Length: 208
Image (tube, rainbow, N blue to C red; front, side):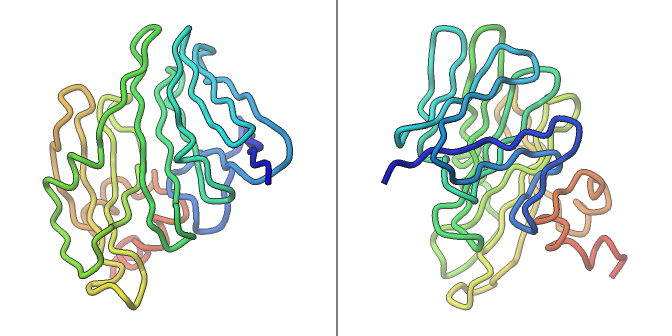
């Protein structure tokens, strides 16, 4: 079967797909028979997909992003007006496993920050499940930092199911600046949450 994705980009209104979108203002990839070519806000970067392949094009170079092009389970969030972006995607349904890839623009170049490696080293969560969900949530400080959430999948097969924690990542130094509980993260950054994160943090947002 030929897979390709249509990028639903309503630039003036955030696009949400229930509680499966983690970052406010994201665009959602859904399954279609058509290929896509979508340009970043600054016009320098494109996401192209079709024929079972996804690619991020920056100038004359390209980065393979096929692994995070999954139907109905992928969101793209651009830093405006720059061309930096993160992609959240699940390989196993809405419960997970969710992963994130983060690309920071610098002129005509795009650098990928290994968020997964940083969070794995500093993880504050424990579970019998080996693979934990990891989602980028929001750009902070004009894109210098990134708010990331790590969560134990909401599955009965995982101990400590649904436990979650936030991290603030310095994208320039590629280091974790701060770890926050769900309550502290909701208090400071709740207005930036997409519906998926908001659902997890609802008790904290309501002051419970």
